[in-house]
Image 1 (cartoon, rainbow, N blue to C red):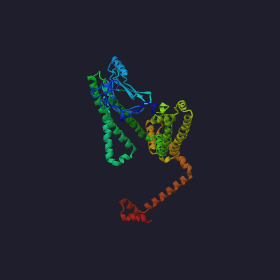
Image 2 (image 1 turned 90 degrees about the vertical axis):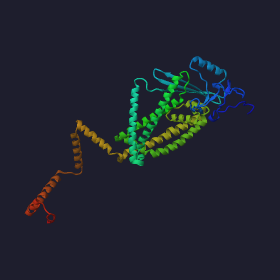
Image 3 (image 1 turned 45 degrees about the horizontal axis):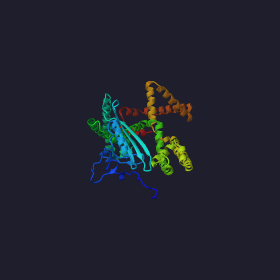
Image 4 (image 1 turned 180 degrees about the horizontal axis):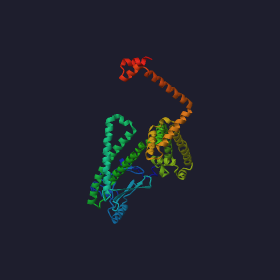
Length: 462
């Protein structure tokens, strides 16, 4: 192949990236020349640029590189771009170009950090990947800042209260504390809130320092990647905290039969679903591997394992592009699509639904799972209705009496037997009264208070 292949270009690797200094036009610097190359032709590390590694669609990129400053005006930017184009700043060995700029909207007090990445493969082709992040560096601006400060102070107070409360429970229960599900949720929630508070304080301090730098040098580009990183991390943690806080509402709904039934169904299906997910992952990864080998070189959605897995998961939701698969491979494409749809969308999904439905049927039939809490709630509702005069207590008493009468009548109850029992009881009482009060000595004993010995004689004389 040597006579036919005149050049070879390697893919990008973070460990093997070029970090040498060059002259304009990527000319090598000799020993006698000045070692200080221009900014656009000299490598700068991630620490120098206040950046961090970037994950693109193709691979990971280091935070450093060769940087060209476009200035703060359109004329300066045009001149710089034309000069870089003439000197072939982007050549065959370029694997990614990052275009970064920051916009500020004074009306809304928001910064827009724009990062447009164009990735170049060693085989050719350019793949753009734009990213935009909108956030505020200065939160306390305008009249609404007092509401924000009040909300943050209340959040801090509630966090301190729940922290002390959970600490007391942990000290009293010790290791038994972690056996309760809601205790674990509460501990995770409090821990995340503490981490979020620390990140919030750090983000607030770093934003203040960054705003001071912007005021001192307004015409210089300030890299806000770390500010964006901390803001995104803060937003993610805040969203997870809100999720756990809303999850605690299920604890309040434990008196609802439907909610309790849902929890019992999930508890019943935990073990079968674990076995099912193991089998599903094996089958799914087999289809992922097959799709990657078939379409990775032809379709953009199948270019790596992660994108293949995302595409196949979306295909389960009946969102797919069959024409692209058929055009990529006229024979194996339709066969793969048919096998995946039949195996995953029909067989495995129906197995999943069968497990859920079987557990639901078992829980509905199991009356022992129903807690007495439901009767407590029903009793409280009835008492409240009786108190306010809605569906009063008299109706409830009539209902109870009618039910009792039906139960007694169903067990063979007869009014003649009740009359006969009443006469016999009256006769027995009269007989006992005659025994006790015909004896005068017994009367005196009853009046003066009998001794232990006479008491025994009285009850044993019969």
